[in-house]
Length: 126
Picture 1: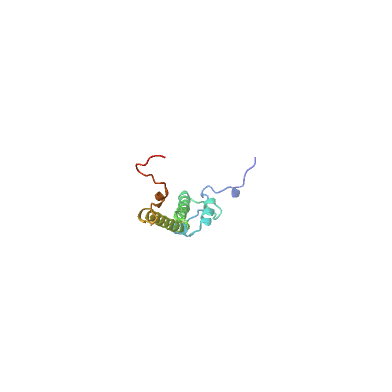
Picture 2: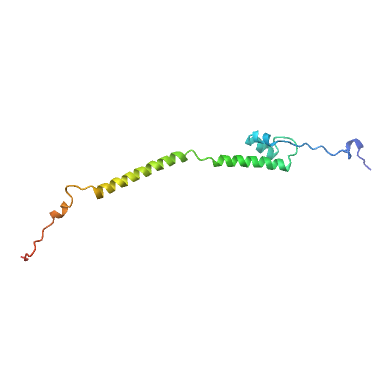
């Protein structure tokens, strides 16, 4: 029968030593996105990452993404300014049109009616 030498067997009285990765919230906030992603994937550090630490890293990445996505695009302000200018010019155009069509009287107003044939009253047909 084959027996394994005792020096090759693990000592049952000692629990196995597991390396743990310990990080604080301040350390997590100082790390870049790439370093945090490497921590989540296990590439960056040796050792076991506990579930609460994984959740804290994931939360930090999510909050950074929310902050980046909540900033308005750089085109919002110029688009608003162009829209205001276009609305102002449209209002001026409408006011000018109303002024010239309603309030402005020309000398030749209703002259087109004078060019028609006048019908004389009480005239007999020829």
